[in-house]
Length: 108
Length: 117
Image (cartoon, rainbow over all chains, first blue to last red; front, side, top):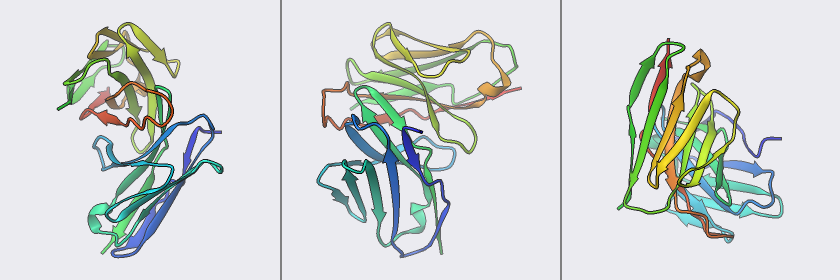
């Protein structure tokens, strides 16, 4: 079983809609969690950290469920510029593992 | 502020040739350093990470090696490249782990696009 798993998509979503991604991780010793965004042929960029109590940054909301070992990302009022691949990232000590990403296409 | 430099941006090499990619970080001390590879249309594969000078952890057996000769320098090498080594190579740094909930993310360089002919 892969350490971090995501639905690869693609998710094709009309502009203005709400979209949610889930990610599961296999190692219960995982300590920190993040969502990154990667545009085509570019390096990944940190979107937001994921805190145990859940956190929000503008249109983006991240949730962590340690008992079920999954992380979620919700994007509200999606924009064309949100089209990208969203990477779920898990940190355990000094080791950082990326999921393969979920591709999102926002349709005009 | 911290910055990470990775070069070259693009590289075309023949099969069997050697490789050396360099990554340096500025503005921080004792960073963790990482090398990833991303094949076309695929996810990021962790190749090596280092928590200090001379300390290298290898994640995937392959014909690549990594070295950390200085605190803020991380080098990816190969003696003989294979066609399968083509990909997008990314260097990243993070603050060293300080235990549960340290929430220290990674920050990436611009990447090196390597094509093997």
